[in-house]
Amino acid sequence: MTAIPMPNERAPRRRRVNWEMWGWLYMRLSGVLLVVLIFGHLLVNLFLGDGVKAIDFAFVAGKLADPFWIVYDMLLLWLALIHGSNGMRTIINDYARGRLRVVFLVLLAISTVSLLVLGSLVLTTFDPCPAGTPADILPQFCSTL
Image: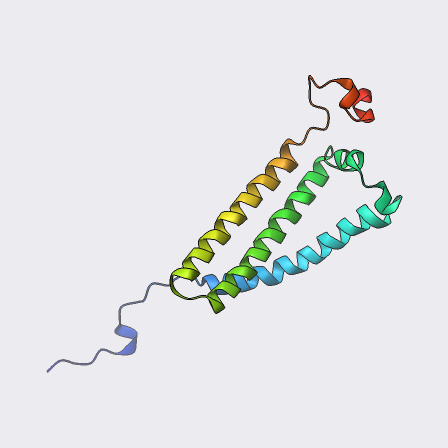
């Protein structure tokens, strides 16, 4: 006759990563940080200075010449895109089934990665005054650099 093992004698189960919990936590934390970043973005771009009429190529080029604003905009880009994609992933998981769900999730992943790469490239490689460009088509502030 075999004895039934005591509960503490069972083999320990391997813990898995709870992705849903981490996704839920990310949505809360990134949401709070996004609210702060978005209001800061709106404050600087719309309320300080001359308002919306001052936003032109020179304004954007001036902001992207400062490493602080590159990091700020990069953080805003990454947090917002991943936050939105995580929300879309939740909706897809709730309403799509079978192969359609897999197709939607793959398309979501491709679009998210593409937008993150393209946005990051724009923020890190933007040059308003490229070398070799005729002076008559460059913005006025390029002549002072």
